[in-house]
Each structure stands twice: as C-alpha cells, then as structure tokens.
Image (cartoon, rainbow, N blue to C red; front, side, top):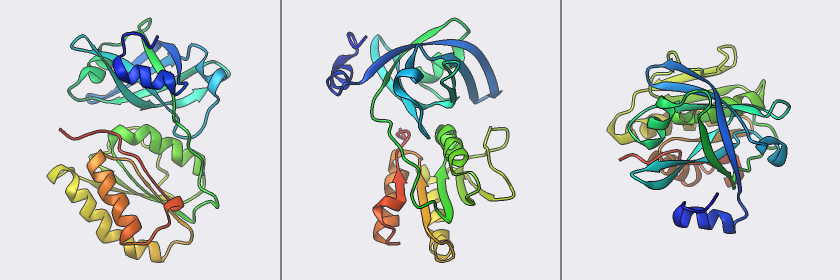
Length: 240
C-alpha cells in the first residue's frame, strides 16, 4: 500500500507502520462545518489495540499526489471492528473527501506513532486547550480521565458540536479565533497562573494549530515551570 505515496509513505514503511483499508458505513452532518463518519477498520483494532486519543493517518489524493492527514478515532470498538471519524470542514482535499464520502467508500490508512498514556498520578485538575480539529481527541481524553475536573479553553464556537463536557465538573471557556491564534495564547497565559496555584497535580493538554500549540507549550514550561511530564502538546494543523 505504500507504493505511490512518495517519501512520506516510504519513511513510514521503514518505521514499520501498518497499513489498513477502511470502509465508510454511515455519514452524518453534525453541523454545516462538522461531519461525522462511521467506518469498519479492516482488522486494525484487533492488530493494534486501543488507547486514549488514538489516531491514524489517512491518505488522500491532492492534485494527483498522495497527501496524508492524521485523525483521531471516535469510540473505537474492537469487538465490532468499527470506529468513527469527525471532520472540521474547511478547504482542502481531506475535507473534500469527507464531504463526498458515502457508505461503501474506502480510504487507505497507516498506523504509526500514536502512543499516549494517561498521566500518572491522575491530575487534580486538567487544563485543556483545543479547537474543532482536536475535538475528538479532547473527548477521548475527557472520557479517559472520568471524574477529573477540567478547565477547557475552546477556540471557536462549541455550540452544536459533540463536546463531551459535563457542566458539573468541566468549565468550558469559548475563545474566538483572532490574530491567527495569538488571542487564544494571551487568554490562556493570563488565566493559567492563578488557576495552577489552586490545582493539585495539574496536567496541561494542548492541541491547536502548530504555532499556537508551540507558543503555549513553551510558556508552560519556561514561564510557569510545569514539568515536561505534566504537559502534553501536539499541533493538529498548520495555519495558512
């Protein structure tokens, strides 16, 4: 399957990545800009197992060339060999494929480098920074941490989106996207120091665009002194 995928496919194959073919079984428009698919896994979950925020690389055609994007599995079920994918729609070949996807359509995928372990000890409070692109991963994390309370900065409007926040223990702070994410960085950097002082064993999880994620991760470690093992940061997309 790696043939025709250029250097990215060749590198992944050398890293012993595993290839699978998924088949769409259901498609649903959650909002005009957010689409959910359900797929069969082609034997993947039995071969790889499941862990929190697990993601896969999907392969799309972009002007005749292979293009890969990473997506988090939603409610993976090894028993039935099924899972969901959710797409925050915008311009691009991945969103174009998702908009057009219908039951019976297939997509090739590669699994490599998706390991994530829940923080130990369990945090006294989770601090999460996310957006529609990382919403499936955020939901997986909230499910995994169960009763742990959380403060969530969500860039964009979460109304109508399947955010699994429980008002009894999750505080959601919606932040409009301004200045290419710099507004979000300032909001988090201003509020976080006081919140951290009141939180035993805090854990910071950051998953936004690459530049925003990098800025917040650097601030957490250099300015706030959070140890590396209590910060998880991964850029989910690049602003153009």
